[in-house]
Image (cartoon, rainbow, N blue to C red; front, side, top):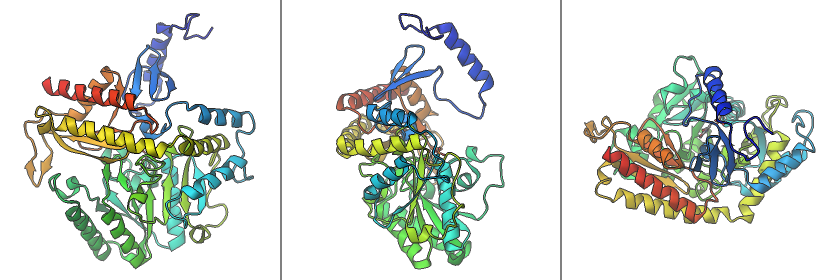
Amino acid sequence: MSATADLNGTRDASTTAHLVRLGKKHVTNGLGRLTDGIMSRGEGSYVEYEDGRRLLDFTSGIGVTSLGHCHPKVSKAAADQCLTLVHAQCSIAFHKPYLQLVERLLPMMPHPSLDSFFFWNSGSEAVEAAIKLARVATGRQHIICMQGGYHGRTFGAMAVTKSKTIYSEGVFPVMPGVFTMPYPYWHQHNLPPSTPAEVLVNQSLYQLELLLAQQTAPKDTAAIIVEPLLGEGGYVPAPPAFLHGLREVCDAHGILLIADEVQSGFARTGKYFMVEHSGVRPDIMVIAKGLANGFPLSGVVSRKPLTDHLKPGTMGGTYAGNAVSCAAAVAVADAFKEENILENVKERSHELRNSLEALRSDPDVAPYVLDVRGEGLMLAVEFTSPDTRVAGALAKADSPPGLATRVVHACIERGLLILTTSAYEVVRFIPPLNISKHDLKHGAEIFGEAVRAVLKE
Ligand SMILES: Cc1ncc(COP(=O)(O)O)c(C=O)c1O
């Protein structure tokens, strides 16, 4: 009998409480945590805690378990690989799942020129590798990134992360040679939420023009890194004209365009990659999260003439492209097709958006909602805050403070696991891509109830 369960399967509360106390004392304070307790099981769209709570999971482990928790085919592929070969180090030999994964991903790429792969472990590491590739391939050093962008917590990735100061507070200097331009998000321009996309795009591209004229000469600029759908910065889709504008600037000056699709990739937005909505071709694409449904795996994809600039040995890492993770990712790619995931994302996205818009049109709620936005199953609601300024004036000085966080906790109390994002009052929706109509509706109802309850407090 396990230490945490008796013969009837009920949990030993004292053991759980002991472990939680141990965690609070001995796990680094540097980790934030949304919920208390121990998450012990996951199945499909639900997670269970040791204390018996069962929550509908609209976080997907921050956009990772896109096929739901413990997808039977993905978990089986990983388990089989565990009993065959766990670690075939990538600098010692090829292994089969690595190559099978390349074979699966090639036809999924947003452009046929993206034909050269390197697999890593985390999104941050892949961002670092993309920057390294851009610097080596162009012989230039500078990187332009977006105000509000998030690319990870390692030193290079942190240098191009501009979504919140907490990620780099107290640890400068980070990687030098980084310049920042505004994303076409109304907050970044101090404009109201109703500002037409065209105005935001023009403002952002004008700032890029200034940056290249006044701060970083094009001949010193290796790459522009952009999330085609701003993630940790607020769940803001880039208008297609913005990505086209970046592409034009890159082409005019020999600068490389890096699309960070870590959060927006792998069907999350209703297409395999967010850049497909605009048709813009990146020179380098960074992938992770949904790629292996929870097994640690990320990747950098580019075109062979660029990656041929890399001398053998310049890329690599002990665990890079782990065989178990690659086997899981092969199963994920197969499941996407077998289970018509793209279709499900489109249908469920439509339903969720309708339900969020219906909530927003409730006269009791409307004054507190600034925006409903996103793409596919990467949607968000932005609430007012007492100190959100729009065009210099307070948007809603009498707004209750901390609405997003309070709504999230009210959702959790009612059985829905959900997250905030950004420096603003934003709640994000990243449910599994294969979520059922029923579960999606249930989650949206809980959210509506939670919002109404918080606004009455
Ligand atoms: C767009 C984007 N890039 C990079 C990262 C960093 O990935 P990781 O946390 O795996 O290092 C994230 C993580 O949330 C992300 O959303």
